[in-house]
Each structure stands twice: as structure tokens, then as C-alpha cells.
Image: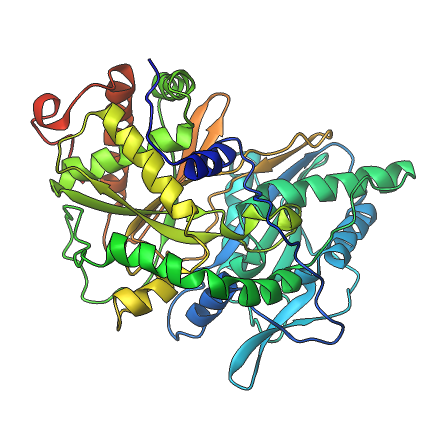
Length: 478
């Protein structure tokens, strides 16, 4: 029998939209275009990223890299024209972030035709070409953007073979989120390319607003709702003053350097299938199953009754007007799990649904704003949790011999001590672990993933398992 929940009708409806991938929530009024000549502020989430960039001496935490693998004949001038059209279409990709009267603002610039830098690695032995491409992109991703001087965007092309290219897009998160990187940009660049090579009009709807319009609207519209959301988070997080949850094999540094490395991982084929089958049977999503399983793993390591971890909420993408916009519309949120009643996994999944629904319903306020009320004096980018997980958006069918690829390219930094980004592929669940090497070594991270794999296999096979009776020994050691 499927696990049931006692959510309110409103939260059940909201969570249902989130499960289905439809985060758009209609409201009584639409987001208007800003008036001509108005200097737009940053959105609340963008401003927190901007503030973090002002801290000296830390790596470029928010530089990201996405790759599109292109096979077959490639007309490079047409590809450059396609990317230029995307930058013309989306103001945020030709925006700098400057300071006026002590506050950051968005300055939109005219589009400049794109001329792609091209690296040719065909002379490198085939067995190590991918490593060479990653080395080149690591160097580019670790080069900071000057947000007040240049739009934070670097497209580059690497020629891997006579009929194979990789298009790399290096961008700052202030203009890019998961849906932008894995869905909107690949779909639009493919559509423009196909249209231009066949002489037809691109099949793309006109955008109703731009990111700067959303930022102006958000600043005005959130005022009435912000205190209610603050009250929710004060109740959720006000009593939790300790973040110690992992049994570290390294002494925890007194202050973080925010260094980071990325390593790939995968769940076994058997566990991946069990996770999918269980989620379908229980009318839930693989992400909520992963979330409940990961919370259980944290509890098995720490034996704490209250477990805090983080994820990325769709926040601004709940508005239908922004669903097709490139930009940053996400917001890290804190999820608190209570193990005081020694729940079964089925009961923990109910808790995961409630916790996630509550977070989604109160995710407009950036976590740093909440910290300034709940934990004044804590200026870290992760004031409530050190560990986070997410599930990458599904990638579209581009109707070309192109595919969106997650590469092991990193900025050299990590905002969290451990971040597991899962990717659901037909052959199984894979992912990328981003972690702070001052806190974890690679063996520890591999053990964490191994323990999670085994725990998920056991829990999805028997969701009535209860930790105290069925997992008397630690699941593993980190």
C-alpha cells in the first residue's frame, strides 16, 4: 500500500506540482515589464551570490561548466550565430552587476556577436583526449569573473575528433541554474542551429519578461509575505545550534578555506532500479526517496535526533513567466528531520514529503537573510547545514546527434563540505560529489556513497525497517 501523508490540501497540491516537474504556481497578477530606463536591482538570491563574491581570498565558488557533446558535421559560424541569438533573447547573459549608491544593480548591454574560442586536441592520444579537455576547462572554470566588468559567460569549443566537438559553457551561477544549464540552453541552441541550417524560423515563443523584470517584481511583491516566511524558518531552525553531524577522520579546521574538488560516483544498477520501482510504487519521486535515505544515513553516522541537510528549491521558477528564462532562480533551503520517534523508512518518507513541502512553500527568502535573524554573526554561505543533495533536471531530446554531458570540471571551490548532485540515467543513478578536501578525503566520500547505496537497497526493499532494531550497528564510517 502506498505511503500516505496528512499534508494540507494547499501543500499537497504544491508538492504534486513539484513531483511532476511543474514548479509554476499561478497567482492573481502577472509579473510586469519594468519601466524603460529603470535600473533593476538583483533578485534576492542573486544578491547573496554577489555578496559572496566580495569576500577576498576564496575560490570562485559559483563558477559552473556545462558541456554539449556534438557529433557529425558542425557549421561553426551557424553555431556562433545561434549562441548570439540566445544572448540577444536573454538579457541576463549580457548583463554586468555594478554598484550604485552602495547597492548592486543589473546593467544590460547590447549584444556582441559571439566568436567561439576553439581548442583542437586531435593531436593528443585518443585515450587521454577527454582528460586534456577537462584540464583545459578546469583552468577556464577556475578563472574568476569580474562581475562589474563583463557578463559572466564564457562559451568555448573543443574539437575532439574530425566529427566530434564539445561545446563548453562556463558561467557564474548569478546567470545560470540547473534548468538553464541542462534544459533551456541546450534546447534553444539546438533549435536556433536547426532553424538556421534549414532556413526556417526558430520555433521559440517570445519571452514575456526578463530576469531584471522578475527582480523588480520580487522586491515589491515579497514584502507582504516575508514575515510569514521568516516565522516559519525561525520555528524550524531557531533551536538548532550545532552542525556537527559527520564523524570526520580529519580534524575540522577552525575556519573554512572553501576549497573543493569534484569526483564522479554511481549507485549500483540494482539499487538504482529498486529506487525507481519503490518510488513508482509509493507514488513519490526518486529525489524524495534519495532524500529520506540520505537523512537516514546521516542519522546512522551521527546518532543525532535532529538531522539538518540542504537542497536547492525551485523558488523563483514557481512562476510561469520565468519557466523559459535563462538565469538563477534557485534558493538553498534547510531540511530538518526528526528521528526522536525512531521512524520506519516509510514514516521517514512521509516526513520527507512534509519537510520538502514546507520548504517549497517558504523558499522565497534566501537562507542568508534567515541566518541574519536566526543566527546573527554567522556569515558563512551555509549557516544551517554542511551537507546538501540535489537531483539534476532531466535533459531534453535535441533531435540532433548532440547530448548534454556532466563533466568532472570544477572551480576549485565548494560552498558546502559535501554536496551530492545525482543524475538519473537509463543505465542507473550516477552523480558528482563536490567536497572540501580539508574535511573529507576521497576514501571517505567513496565510503559514504557505498554506504548510501547499501542502505537504499535495504530500505526500498523493506520500508518498514526501523533503525534502532534493524540497524543496530553503524551503517559505515565516513
